[in-house]
Image 1 (cartoon, rainbow, N blue to C red):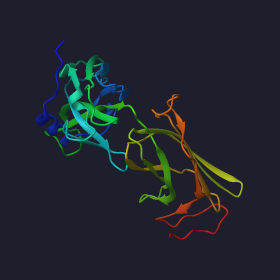
Image 2: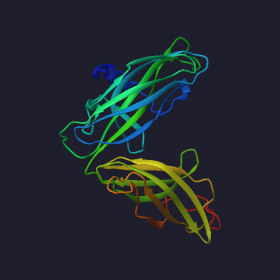
Image 3: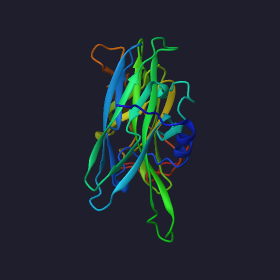
Length: 288
């Protein structure tokens, strides 16, 4: 089998039109798995199979595959860069085949990704790259007849070299209204480690014997970053609310079990950016 890597110029053009959706059934194509976490031992070789499928039962689709660097912005949106551009890039470690696929309706195909970790690494912790699949399709939006749009999906790779530590901490939790008037809880989480965190847990809002519970799952905080996360609050708040945020980090490479509890955050719930009606309280709570 011949292994290929996409050229930097080609990937730069793909990135310009990237749509950050892990499984993009919107244009009838899915990649699985969408997230891959691997240990990166110097001098080793690993292979990952990615399944790409055309789930559209009526159309044939042709796709171009390539590599890119990636990160998450403060709000968790994917940002791409040409391969090898970012300090944590592992794009140069990866080769893949095939570089092009054409899938009939309902057809799937395997893409083989071969990863060779260098014998000498400049730093421990996370290294990352993305496998992208892209295609051009007619624009179906109203008034766009005759135009074509570029669609892309990605499988995101995390390669973690020892010694690695994932060290997330909840720094703040606030309640607010969105511009559409929806109630949300805003979390700020910092990861001071050199490996990403993957958090699962619960936000509990309590007051006067009443409680509102908000489950959180699969919340990623990259190494050395601060992540802001917004979760909907669908129930009325109790009066004089206290917020408690409890997480388990299910990606903790420093632990033999692979998971560790995160220090619980608890504080009076701060309300910002809105006038908020509270249950069993005064009609409104003035914004700060």
